Amino acid sequence: MPAFIIREAFASFAVSLFAAVFAGSAALAGACDTTTVFALQACFQKTSADYLLELGKCENASAGSERDACIAKADRRSMAANDLCQDQEQARKKVCQALGQAPYDPAIHPANFVKEVTNPYFPLRPGTTFTYRGEDAIVTVQVTNKTKTILGVDCVVVRDTKFVDGKVEEDTLDYFAQDKQGNVWYFGETTAEYISGQPVSTAGSWIAGQDGAKPGVIMPASPTIGKTYRQEFLLGEAEDIARIEERGVRVKVPYGSFENALKTFDFTPLEPEVKENKFYVRGVGLVLSLDRVTGEREELVSIERE
Image 1 (tube, rainbow, N blue to C red):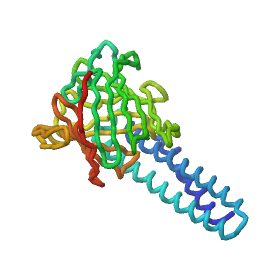
Image 2: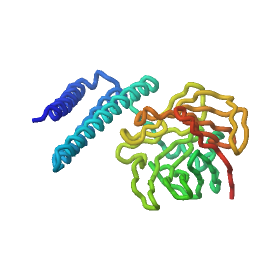
Image 3: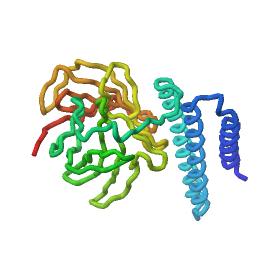
């Protein structure tokens, strides 16, 4: 057996053994740390499976040089994928430090929800369209008159559409609802990516209550500085986190200038390198998304109401 396959097989066995040992003593750890370990194991196993399939394809190259180049490419991809697994693990550990070890299992009582989303930092009045402009895209966010019942809660349906060069690149339906305390909950999304007008992927879609997915808070009723919260949760698919970072921030976008914006830090363990700030204004909502790595801005251009 080639050395690289032996190494890969050993790595997979080691991860499986570690997970088995950990499972036997899971009661000694918190739910958050336990989840982190099993997510790491799942990531390594997927990486291993993908790598072995690539090697199998390489074996069918007729030319030796082509086969060698194929194997080298598979090696690089496998190393990068394993690095990402480890980066995700470290990111999840930080989330556990911020949120604690308790299982994430928010209690949803339909009677505790109201019909309208009126949180001042995240108002969703039906018939309103927000238009945002990025460096190479236009995004429209339409608050529809439709609702979708999820976990017994009637959620407002919001359509988020991204256009590049006038063509739809991504089209998403988001589902929000507000509880009586004023927290705005995110109950899921149905999303599709397009190439040349044809849907090519629905990755990232999730609905609370299905396949272990759970709702999160998109905007707290009391956004106090330092507050960290899950905005969504489906392990391995939807793990967005936000933290209230600052209040009273000055911000200027095409729609206007504001003196008292709320600034959040948004991230996900699934993409540890992606870090973003969002700015919300009372009575308006989201006015700016800022990529902290690239500096790219997505700015509010206009608000239209029916």
